[in-house]
Amino acid sequence: MKNKDVSIERVCAFCEKSSAAPSGDSGEELVLCSKRGLVKASGVCRSFRYDLLKREPKMQPELPKIEKIDI
Image 1 (cartoon, rainbow, N blue to C red):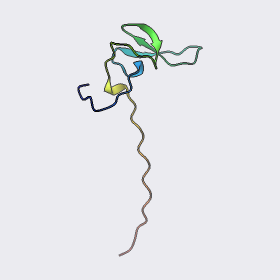
Image 2 (tube, rainbow, N blue to C red):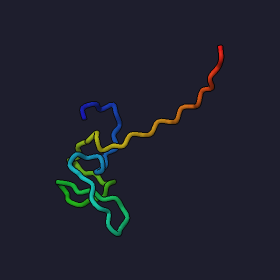
Image 3 (cartoon, rainbow, N blue to C red):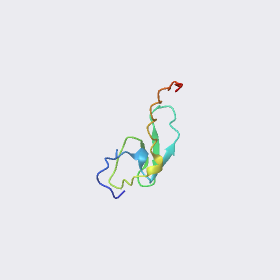
Image 4 (cartoon, helix red, strand yellow):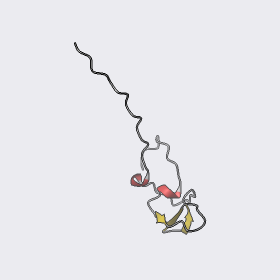
């Protein structure tokens, strides 16, 4: 990502070199990295490349209901 103004959380879960892996008995999230193998999703390495499609956007707040007014 070229824009340096945006702060990106540099974790393996958002890297383009990783893919989701089954978590097994330990209960912690794991990813399969093409460089380092099976690693924690919260880990990071020097070959991090941000993948925009792996981030889940924040949900927008629900808008308040507006009552209909007769004019």
